[in-house]
Amino acid sequence: VDPPSLTNAFVECLTLLASSSCECDKTKGILLDAIGALPDVLNDANALAGGNGSSGESGGNEDENQNEEEEAEEEEESSNPILSTLQLLRVEDPTLLIPCLDAIGSLPLSEVQMEEATRDALEALSNVEAWGLPALVG
Image (tube, rainbow, N blue to C red):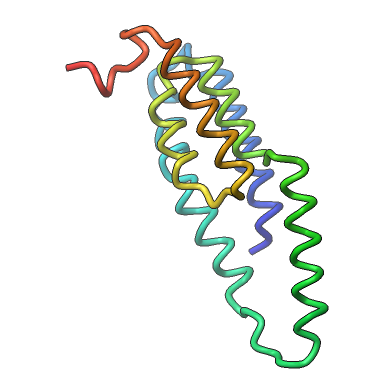
């Protein structure tokens, strides 16, 4: 499984489903299911792709340096396509706020991404009207 390809495919699916979810309850249900399944699917794909681990003893410093450089590049972006898509979906459709925040909370994010997502979530929750929180209003 190629995690970047799976991520891109999931982004495309979410975007397509969201574009027609306002018009069709079945599509909205599929979108909610896709958002809910997203963290499990991506975490499983990442585990399969990275499941080999680094058990080699030689060249460990080079691997660590390369990993640190890759992490630095990722943190500079401070975003990933799934995080950005979920944030966009919840902005476009306030009824998706809770499912999107739930999915974001289950994603493997860097520290910088988690801080950004937390700020965004707190802002979204402070600005949402009661009707936008159907899962919390009873």
